[in-house]
Image (tube, rainbow, N blue to C red; front, side, top):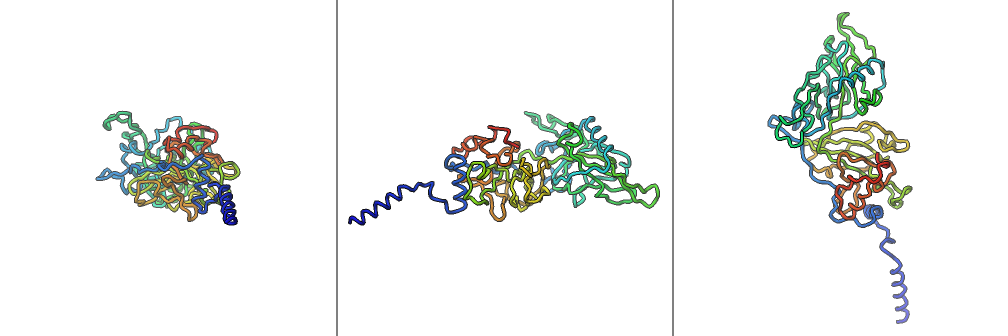
Length: 425
């Protein structure tokens, strides 16, 4: 009896020295959960859904068009209801852009990758009348209303819905030479030449407004260089590599009801070293930053940043490849050795069968990143104007209310209170 009593005492003493924190979680999910709860300072609230809810779907028809539309959405009087319509360019802006193209021969351009975008007329130059129409993308989508180096005027464009408006007559209309391309592509731009009936798709350049003038910073302009190879002598025109024969502005199509999603890929890491202090892990939730809007049967995704160095896909599309960068490069997160200032990417995932962004697969390799109610998330929803974290800046350092939301479920708009803007991109 004495021996048995001693053994029981030793076992009891040993057990009393072991706390729940000393028991190492066995699964990857458990390790991630424990590390996340260390970050936010408590258990995840059982009712927190990380902001994911069904979204409104942009869908028309019965001849209001739009559903399944490809190429041009010519409903100019409806755009302002569901997409942010760019304002007309001022005469001063047009002049500064035109003069830049006229004074820079063979400039080095950039690539942009957008499925949905606006085209606005800037300038018609020499030979413009022989440039039959403007087209874009691999399917040569014609930008309606853009012909002969110019564009017709829409006097019925809805630039926004006035507060309290009850009908279309109360809306704030503008007059502009503009068109909206949907489910299209900025892969390339071209024009048809009336001299030789040939399509020229390599005679353009895309220039960011940032390098032109502060008055057009943040904008993008496409300039075309005329060329003709007709049979008659007066139908032959050699290129001069000044891209000023036709200039248009392109603007990404930003749908009003889109949600922004922050992604953290630590679930695919060696979680034995994960903590919440610098040097162990970043918890920056910027490994991908993207917006989602649902248009007809498609999800329109606007990709803003890729702050990881793992292969990460959204609906099967690798984020670094979409930016034209290798997997090893971090994009738009202020990372050492990364690339900043790249234009967002807009692409479509067709026939998604959902209107909840949580159902769009986000994966690191074969590991799907999740946002499950009451569990530590790998992705969270914020408003589409929310700034994301710079690289290696912990999300709670910019948004202190995030921890309270994770543990108490409030405030649901935790991202509206910025604690430290210097750590935000």
